[in-house]
Length: 85
Image: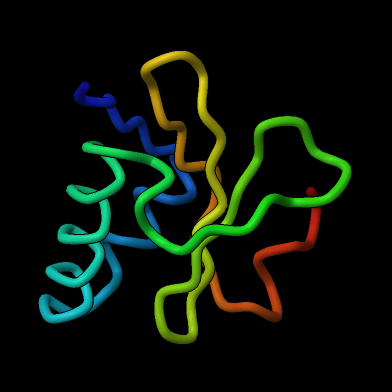
């Protein structure tokens, strides 16, 4: 089953500012997630229903799953990603 991935405006803006090498790394991870959102090592966010995070080097990706859609909410460094949740 293939999942669709939707990026929030913040997540899309963050990815656009990365280097090509980092973009390729994220692209591969999102391809894996689209095949199975539970395949990449993830952790559930406490207090938030169906919200998960994955670690990509120094970055964190916050996302939630709605049926067959993965919504990437925020991508940022560990220090800033959990603010305003």
